[in-house]
Length: 234
Image (cartoon, rainbow, N blue to C red):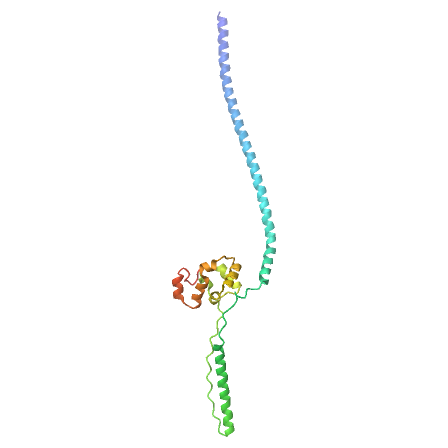
């Protein structure tokens, strides 16, 4: 009887120990399976990132090839554009300048020639009559006309004309307020084609501003265009 009892007790203890060991092993096995699943998901994510980065690298390579090709073609195209621009004649209306009056410049020359002739006639008359020739007084020099200075006006005082537009206008021969003030509708159309504008000259009233500045009416210009009445308008 005692032997059977000990055998039953040993069997129960063995079952309990085996169940305890199996439970722990099963928990560790589940943990390892979870770790394996996470490792597989990480691997899949890394593979997806690898494919994405490979695609971006290929796109960057293609962009770089396109940029290098454009850089190689840029000098040729810019040189061609510069040649075409240099060969194109400037519009006559853009480089027209106000014609100076001839009367003011001709009068001093006429006065000078008349005084010279009168001075030369007096000694000749004295020699004919036998009288001692009197020393003729030196003719007074006529006042020299004021020469028109070729200094260009500051076109940037006009609203809408900045450094770039001023450079383009001067390249077309427009350097003074008087030229802009004398523009016609046809001139405005040609200028807008050169500057790539569309009605901007009329909206910003370039011609009205230029007329006031050409006439020297600074007070009216400052009153009508207060934002542009500075010496260096941007």
